[in-house]
Image 1: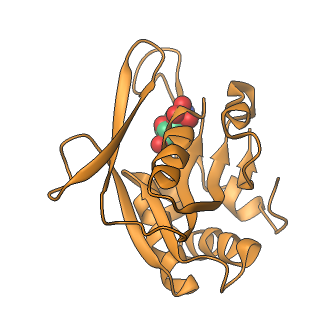
Image 2: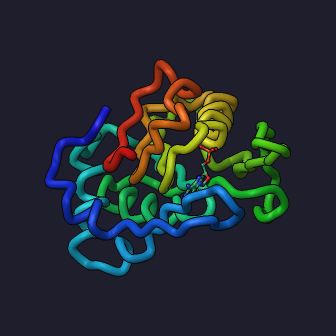
Length: 177
Ligand code: AMP
């Protein structure tokens, strides 16, 4: 589902970096968006308005760019912020979930006490690509017996069909390519 708002300011502030981090990949660089006060606040506001205050207890941000969007979204909801990090970064006891990358596997972790049963959780990241990261995030939330209220992305790369991995969840993206 696309969030309805004037997206031109956001499209204009996303920069394509060819062959980063490896040949053949077009990296969607959101640092110009983050550095533009109007674009940054528009992105955060669009996500908050789309889900609505009072609907979310915790916002899960995915390391690292997801943190930057998720934290102000949580603040506006009056919700808690919970970091979902790469293996070995969180200091206390964790629950982990591994998932397939193109030629490798990756692991995401959340603190065991970061989410409570029944929490209504919004998962936030900068880019939905193949969907493996988003799916692992959903699995971690559900293993804590919390509820995935939805997922929000600044960018969805539709040609990578990540939506299939989170079929059935209420996910929304600000920009589609
Ligand atoms: P995936 O698990 O394939 O959906 O990948 C999503 C994660 O990788 C997100 O946390 C993104 O930050 C990052 N990512 C994947 N592809 C890109 C891209 N083309 N540009 C920027 N970030 C990307």
